Length: 128
Image (cartoon, rainbow, N blue to C red; front, side, top):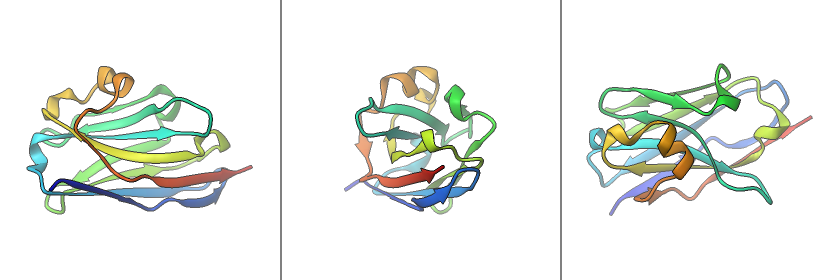
């Protein structure tokens, strides 16, 4: 059974930082793209970032470039999202997702969303 478990969310002031983790199990990690998506109340889901677990290629939506960094520890089957300079508009539930093949990570994936596996989400709230 594939499981994705997010952690690391919380409440932070604007300008602060958080690091989200997505621990994957039940899959061959290197075969997958792992993405971070978020959804704020009353808004559509938005693709934030993704990583090709095989070659570590990364993509970011424009609104987080220069502030967020995605990385992976393949030995731990875990992907991280380091979020710096957080803004109130970053407030959302953040979900990680896994899709094959790993090469699917890119602008199309962030725009169209995942099809295979989702985590349960972790809440991020940024106060002004």
